[in-house]
Length: 363
Image (cartoon, rainbow, N blue to C red; front, side, top):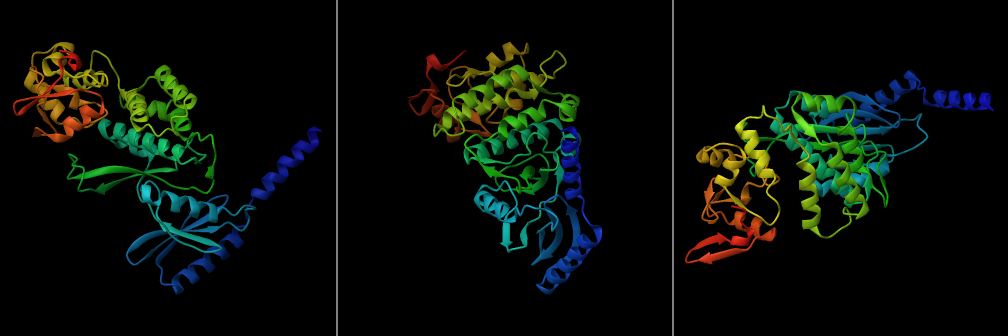
């Protein structure tokens, strides 16, 4: 019995062994065909169990061409192409360009692997990227797509800088964006596990150590409670966007800055602001009292440059007389009113000014 089991394992190992000459021949042949079809800058990129990846350019676009590994018993190219087509409008994965029987052409995502990025990034950018990936995991769950590798996604999440006209970062109008790659093992299921797997990855092994060195705290017990609620209520299926958003914002706040006496005033202000509950507002003086300072103007400046809005809900901080005040460097910004009303805060108009209702004001 044991002998048979050992033999089977050996057979599996043998099936995974690959013949360098045949692989080299395939790569050489692929390069010749691609060159004839107008591809340039063709070069070998990577080899996996199921595919061989070649990089190239065409019409000034950087591309990946994935060929089926001839020694793999499974052809996953069609599956990967179909998944990428579904995700194309979501802008979280490479854009598929072309699919033929033996190869798949897609956009090439250049960037840093997630652990490399987190090590080098400042704490704000690290936190924002983690929150962004959480949103991607919930999106995949809602599409019933299980990516499979999210409990060890080191080579499956790439982060790169991108120009954007919508988001102004302190770094020359550049922002970071994460991308998911390698969907060859992705499948449809009624029980997707992307979010739970990714959170498990953050809470264990090398990644946990990296985050601790960044001063990023993951509150294990609270995160586990959120995951249980998320699964128990099938929140990835819900059409109640507000309910799902409330839970995800709560989860994101459990992946934040360590709460200790060494925190700067800026960090203490952001932490106290994150504790303002849905449907409530408070004044700058309220935040000041919670952070043991009288520097009201400094608090206003900190919240005006809040890098974590709206998860850290600076829109819930209003004037001491309950007037709405400014938001995102703009007085009477209509977005502030919309955000508050979407959370159930009642707004009263007196003359030409708008105020938060007294029962929704903490002080």
